[in-house]
Structures are given as structure tokens and as C-alpha cells.
Image (cartoon, rainbow, N blue to C red; front, side):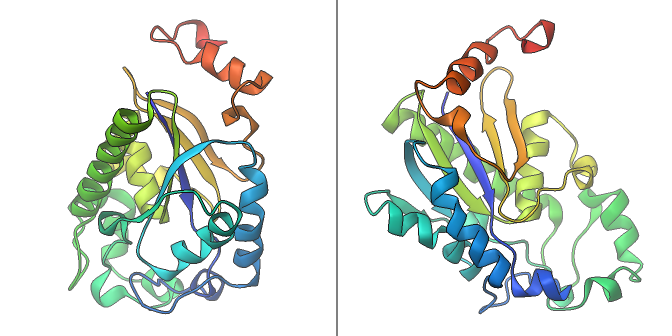
Length: 230
């Protein structure tokens, strides 16, 4: 079973301005986000990535740019299904203003019932992103083997949906999950799927083969996880 590293893009100009960027073109990383992207090759040093997949939006491409420069041999694919949710008429509005919208109560409490005005249903977003993650994971397993590690760079709500699916959580609980910009969340789809790390902004040494961290991780990820996996 391969290991999926879910990377949220670095902080953007919209993040730092308190705007809901959605699919707005031309939204790139701010200075802090660019620094987060520049740190990514070092965080992933020694991790043998089989492939990287990213949302077509600019902020995801910019987040991966330093990694691509450091690893020109890394296969990189743009994946339409992991684009940001279409927030419709909410796009480019301030989050402070949106907090007063009646629909926001439903967004917080029952996201499975939300259809953004002129945009997408959260359940539709979840379905397409989860399908993409699981299908790419199966493809990586077939082409690169069960020990392969691969990277998917996408957006916050998308990562929340993938994590909720892996943990068997109803979509109505996914607002309890909060991945920060440039954080890495690791999932291994097995029986059951395992959440190996969530929202990590530090080093990723446990995914480097033949290290103490990697050996410990492999020992804990058993098919019969009892006793806390310790």
C-alpha cells in the first residue's frame, strides 16, 4: 500500500487578506507562502517520491515549483479533479463578511447539505477529490509498488474531505479538521486506511527509507493494529 502525502499549498495573498479565493485566476503565494514552498525540498530530502499530482490553480503550481527545480526527474501531473471547490457567488468575498451569511451556519454544521449559490455542492467536491486520491493511489501502487510514496498538492477543503473519507467520518464532521498552509498529511490506504500524520509542518524523515523513523513507522502500520500500534 503506497503512502500518500497530501500537501496543502503555501499561504496565498488571499489567505493573508482574508478572502475566499476559490477558483479565481492569478492568486499566487505571498512572501510567507513562497518561503514555505522554498522549504519543501529540504523537508522532503531523501523521500523517494514516485510522482507528484497537483491542482491546476496557480498557488499549487507555485508551491511545487521549488521541488520541481530540485528534482527535475520527478513526474508531475496536473489533475483537474483536485481543483478548489467552486464557491460560486461567494468567490472573492471576505471571510468576515461571509461569516454573517445564513448559509454559513449550514456550512459549519451540515456541510453535506451545502450547495454554494451559483457554485458546487460540498458533497460533489468531496466525491471527485476522494475518487481522484484513491484512483491515483491505486495507480501508483500498480506502477511503482506497495512501498511507493507520492505527493498530492491541493486545497484545504479537499484535504479535509480526503481525511474524513480515510477515517470513515461523515462529511458533516469534516469541519473539525484543519490543515494549515504548506502542511503535510500522510495517509496509507489499507484495511483499514491509516492516518500516519496530520497537518505536519516539520521534517518528514519517517518517510525516508532505511531510517529509524521509517522502520518504526513500518512496524506500527500492521494489518492488525492493536495496543495503539506502539
